[in-house]
Length: 116
Image (cartoon, rainbow, N blue to C red; front, side, top):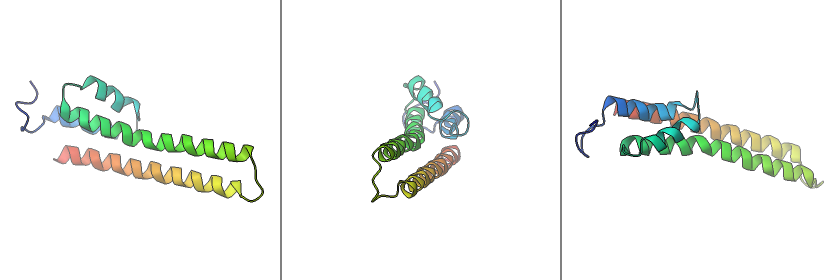
């Protein structure tokens, strides 16, 4: 058994697996935390962090998809009152900002898991 009881400190291997879920942003985003989340169903510590990593890595992809749909629909129904070029640039910048914030969050969470 890796954990003695509910109140005990998680083992190093559990901390490492939880931290890898966050750090997977660099090598296998979304997929690795999802696999860990499914496989670690009997380990609440790892499951909680894999779930957080999954959603925090999926959020930029969802935003990018929504913004891409908005840009596509806006281009299809071009209106002379709205500058779709500037709107597109703004939505791309917002997507990049969300991705950067997600990256910083994931790295900070990985460090936090390893230190605590």
